[in-house]
Length: 309
Image 1: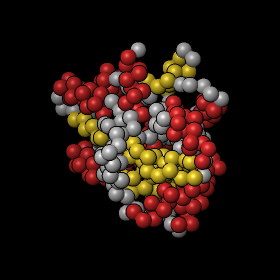
Image 2: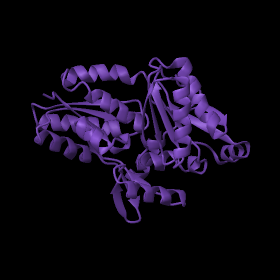
Image 3: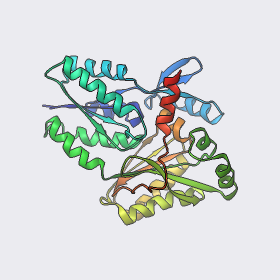
Image 4: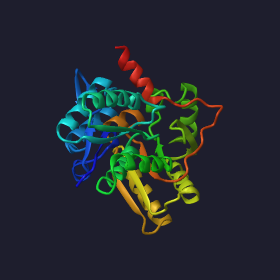
């Protein structure tokens, strides 16, 4: 018998069968397409391809993240369906209002439903790596209660090292990652920045590599030197199969017999990180942030724009 359920936002990029088989529930992030808000989705291949075609052709999409009220309705519905114990895996609290909104809503729902318990986990991550964490948390739902699983997965979170390799430089300025001068210089030199999330959940540039393949190779080299578990990796692509296959082949060569989970990065991550981004994740000690640099606040900046309107 399941002792709790797991919840996460749609930016975790989990597929329908993964959600059903692991009792994982998702609250949708929505994007504005024309005058209509549509839910982020990786299950509909046709919608997914159409979305990325528009993105590559210059369409600029706005995102709408769940509010405290959205989370309140989401948690209340789960409890009324009989899921009185919930673990919600939130985006890094440094980068997004996701954690704070979920935390506040959870407190109100637990007051309303006295016998319920909702644990909000700061994943210190963004994007597809949240899905890996959610599935890991769900694997404990038969053997542990929610409190025990929350403590256990919190320790796992601190060891997940994840990367987002950015290829399409035009999208970097839209997200506010680099200045226009830095962008022009990078384009002339063919520099591809590799982003990662630090030990405190901040988004930072780990390495600048010349060429797409060197960017991927720099991540694999980091895994060779630092990965605590050299058997399990994930590679998600934002609709860029060629580079995904290169990353998978390189991982298989460097780590024979390793398990590699593959999938598509969803629409939210396509908007934030570009249609040609590729996400590579593995378990390793996280990179510590450099004190001289401020965190790159992609998610938080978009939240502020939406809230101001």
